[in-house]
Length: 629
Image 1 (spheres, rainbow, N blue to C red):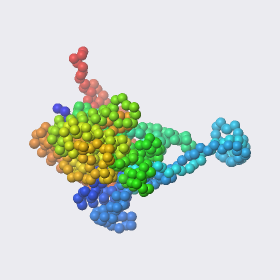
Image 2 (image 1 turned 180 degrees about the horizontal axis):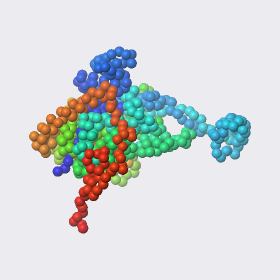
Image 3 (image 1 turned 45 degrees about the horizontal axis):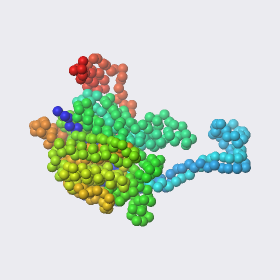
Image 4 (image 1 turned 60 degrees about the vertical axis):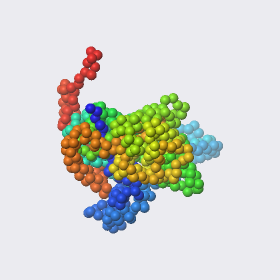
């Protein structure tokens, strides 16, 4: 019996806000929600952005006024809409009009220049045309004649000033003791905490049901940690007259999003891994989770990605490639000089490059038997993730044949599991939708050709990057969180930043949605295309489909027992959601807590026991190659 990998919890943060319980998704379809959900979404963002504080059962603003939830939503709606999703980079992150710059200046034929400098700041060796005289114990006077090179601090204005950044006012570093952590790892702690809390099941209770090595964590970042506390800091240190710190090198690694979850969030001693595949990195990690659960190697997997690439250096590198949409190009798209930052990302429309973003997304997957035993909420299932390369190609960054294979396999897999009718009538695509001219043509060609091959017409297509931008590694985590919202609320978000589909898009069999659409879906296909030929497509089943499958596999009586257990789990999960909506994120950060006593580990030929875990690690192996002896 093949175990079905089901999603029992998820969480994270991006430009739309908190992912768990569909809050981030609902920001993307805000105007299509009923009044109650609109208020709940806006109140959650108002608390996250520190516009209001929840005290004594009421919301209080900065003026000390007490507000009800509807009053919060009404008062701050416009401010929230302007300061979430893709928009202009604000000075709280960095000032895009005032980015520090060092210019080299070479002075020629200097007749005689004198200056006083600290003795310890003298270069070694001294330039040949420097004459040094002592002023006092600490300072010297330098006389220079001839040529001289100096560095001058200056500032520059960035050509690209739009990005998908966390809601204004929400700072991950303020949520726990995050000293020296790069922003991407701060977001890792928050995203993984949100996912674990969303389950409504205590971690210790789960660990009583599984062996320590039946848990795995697969997570990464595409670039590593690029800010001053990670690789950005140690690569620039000497150029900025600093020294690399002992933390920058280690914390800069792209495996750290997994390592931080193991060491500080869940305390796992199970399998760990960090797979990167450029923009498809999340789906690469999800594939490990799905394959290991289906094969019975693990019973629970935490899977995710976290990335904070909205830094001047990263953005200028991508801009140099011509990949990002500059302000000048963005203004030209609208035929004027005004830059519409909130519509910078326009998948499948007339566009001029993608929009950089930051995001952290984590998902908890269990095998179906464990989920039923624990009464876990099931948000969906991922039966397959397909990965294929492009083969020979001239440009390493250009698209190729691999994505045809991944999408065709995903559709074939879904057709085999849920039937061709469900796929033809009740499936949709979450496109990579990077908002580049090349992507809109090549990806639409793939969709259209696969649709033709499987007899699909009017295939709904959306793209979450229109709202939250492109965070590189976690991009498909954004897609998955949004797709789970579609299953829950029955609204597919339209690509509302795109006014019309571009003329060169191939869409004879597609329905590229430019407005929100109410639709009950059975299947979602998450498509990702990464630099270098990293193609991946995941098949995601709606919870209503999964529950029918479980009732058939285990019988109606067992399924009814599961539903009773689920009520208690739901109550616990809802309690966390209410706390988090009101600003208490309950961040899990166990630094130096509950450390394993290695001296107390006991081993015999059948098991390895660790005092801190109820169950042992099984060492009773059988020879799988007995027929070869």
